[in-house]
Amino acid sequence: MFLSSGFYGDPERVVEDLLSVVWELRRRGYSGYIHVRLMPGTPPSLIREALRLADRVGLNLEAPSPTQFAEIAPSKGSWSLDLLSKLLYAARVAGSPQRVDTQLVVGASGESDLDILRLAEGLAASGVGIMHFSPYTPVPGTPLAEKIRRPTPMWRIRQLYEAWMLLSRYGFKLGDFEPLLDEQGNIPPDTARLKDRLAWAHPEWYPVDPTTAKFRELLRVPGIGPRTARRIVEFREKGELTLERLRNILGPRWKRAQRYLDTSKLSGAKRLV
Image (cartoon, rainbow, N blue to C red; front, side, top):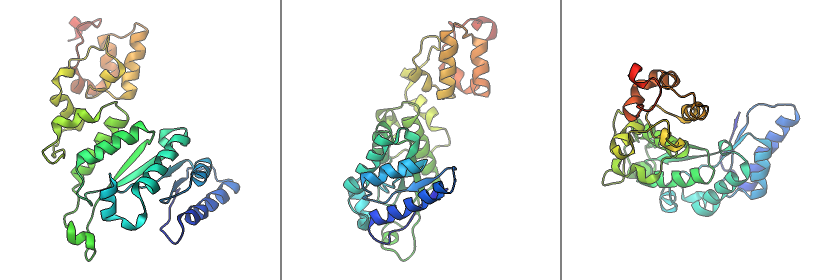
């Protein structure tokens, strides 16, 4: 269940009313998932109460910086004080990154991908577990539509979601993306997956030896995610990692990953390669 509200007065009052609904649902025995959208300027006490009652809370940052935020939502208060600081507070007290999310409107303020990735890296490091990217769509007759007339293409949204996952779950750093950025700080469109493009841009990372590689080094390999990397490490620690086992772990992703791996030290390498 997703609970949100538009502004109809003081933000504290709005959140109090939202939480009264959540409290009543819990009182009546509803134990299912509840996601509460907080308002700009929500006080810490209500953020804690929201996290006590709901499974997840969110606060939309809308833009990656105060200047860009002022261009698209000047009536929503201070980006730094009313939005970012409240979001980071929620992340500190939530207990799990997956309990806190935010959203940006992409393409509404002339921001670059670099602007967004810089913010995303900081949010991931601060415990914000989920970041949504909403494509800007101009609404005829509005001031913003007169300024920015082209909607944000979906390929840009897809690439930003990929980049967020790599930053928040795979251990990639902002600097890793620099070879992909154009002069405006944007990642040009491409049909290839972003992780593969990063691999092509960083040949110095490869090949990765699965018998000695650190967890983060395994995550750099296209076709290997956190769960697969953990399985590789587990079998390695038990002395049971063979080439056949590795191929079974990867399954259909073996074809994608093998060019980035040095499997010469694995048992069975000569027989199966």
